[in-house]
Image: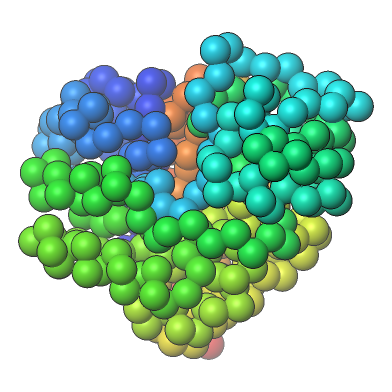
Length: 333
């Protein structure tokens, strides 16, 4: 059975909306723990379980860990960065983790907020760096940082990740999504943390969103329960026109080894503000299912979008159409 995941957020935090989403075909929800902890999201989680109960379903709850992802620190207010500006990164400027600073060498590109903003480093001053904005936009607190080509290697898990795992059973977590998986050691570390917390039965999903993860895919597949083709940051790690090929290659390797895989990111992105998706988006969902995806997921579309229930309806109906097509094709062979 194909799993259809939404992402919980302000747009779908009440039991009534969540009930409608389950009725439309949703099987579970992702909770992004980059900004909150499980206890802080307790009311949303309880609303999810109540909504699932009303529909006679057992909700699947996926927690998306912080992991080795790098993020901008707290900003007093959203910051407008315009092309050509030369902001300071680090002390006296954009707050970044200290581990980032040695890697801010001249010529290094810096992607912010899943690649929406692009900076190039001009000068490293030790505790800060001077950069030039190549692609501007509005930057908010806690948005992602990516340094393409950098050899920066943060720890697999943060202390907050370990705390959240300790609460996993209490809140009905069914799977952990480990971001930016680089090698098998990352997955082994999370497996051990789950066992230590008495959560050894919770599934482990490996998010492939960097070139290291793609290169080490063969060793990652047997070490997890599901591979996640996370196209947001994966698309930042390569020219976008290469992303469809890489997605197809990951899917083929998963099929060959009998490993379930998920496709996620911008499945129905236009529906954050539109009641109807684009033709390209429904084709994307259809093709992901035809490629053998065990699950598909939407993120901001349900978390902060204007039409969370309609998003799930389009996701479910398109996936069902793809499954019907596959059945008809197999019946002719």
